[in-house]
Structure formats: C-alpha cells, structure tokens
Amino acid sequence: MKIAMAVLLLASTAAGYAGAAEKTEQQQKMTVCNQHAGEKGLKGDERKTFMSNCLKKDAKAEGLTPQQMKMKTCNADASQKELKGDARKTFMSSCLKKS
Image 1 (tube, rainbow, N blue to C red):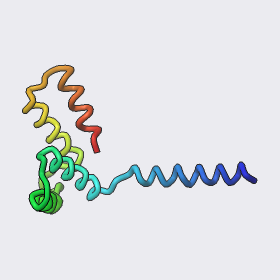
Image 2: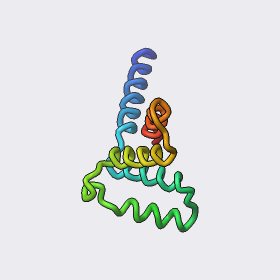
Image 3: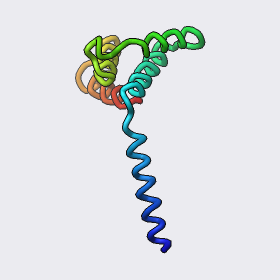
C-alpha cells in the first residue's frame, strides 16, 4: 500500500513539474522583458514603464518569437563586449540558458 502511494505521489509530482516547465508565449515574453530590464539596471517607475511597453509589443508583428528575441539580445550583448571564438560561444550559451 505504501509503495503504491509513493508511486502515485511521484507520478503526480513529475506531471506537475512537466507542466511547470512549459511556459506560455506570454510567460516567455515576460521572462525576456524582465531579463532586458535587469540588464539595463532599470528600477521603480522606469522599470514599470519599460515592462509595460515591452509586454505590449506583439512579438509576432516583429516576426520574432520570444526565443528569437532572446537570441537577438544575447547576440547584441556579445557584440557589444566584442567577444570572439570560444569566449563568444560560452557567453551565448549561458545567456540563452538564463530565464
């Protein structure tokens, strides 16, 4: 009986984590906008305004998915830092993994 309950608990926990890992498009957009605001060091009203404008933008209208927007930002940051070769690859990898 205890084993059956443990299996059910594990199965329901795993299912919950699987659902939590999948973000909606709006959640992805929120993550990207939040990352941009953090990179810019925005605080208070300035951050609120930036987040509002960022979230209002329709990513589809720009032709970019949230992941593509993130790639564009990371690429621009790497270029600004003048990274090349392995240093650029490492930076891009860690930048794209940030949520």
